Length: 173
Image (cartoon, rainbow, N blue to C red; front, side, top):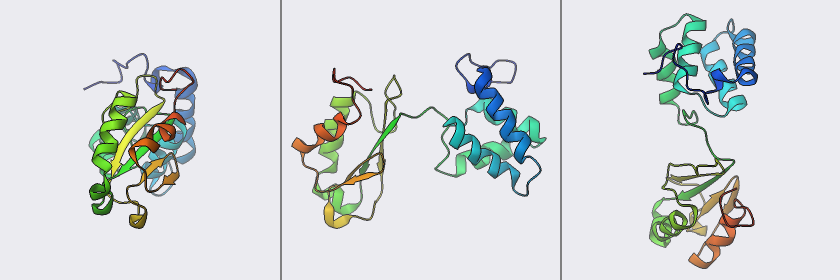
């Protein structure tokens, strides 16, 4: 496990402008009721993720066990511990979407993006995810690009959707 003495050079704590944000969030919210949750939410919003060294740092600054901070980060699905892509592509795996062809769309996206569900492209342009249901079953299969719900997506329609996230050379952007 990383400690505060061994912070990776690309971690937000090692970057002065990001560490200043982290310290400001801690300073502004440490005394609020439920401050840990408020701080973690704000860090997720401002930094984009909460790394293990960040969790250790927050715990130390708040004088709480690391397990208390890690427990919150690992319990709530909206917290992430790794950097995410500029764009998010979600494939619905609810029953209607699954039967409607989502697994084939996922295979096609893996080929186009060069990543697996749950991964982010190396340049942090795209994160690909699967989800259980987006509530648009009558539009199955559904692919959500960023916040845009795309229904009745067929194989030939997927590349143009993904190209919204790609640069002109066809590489992730």
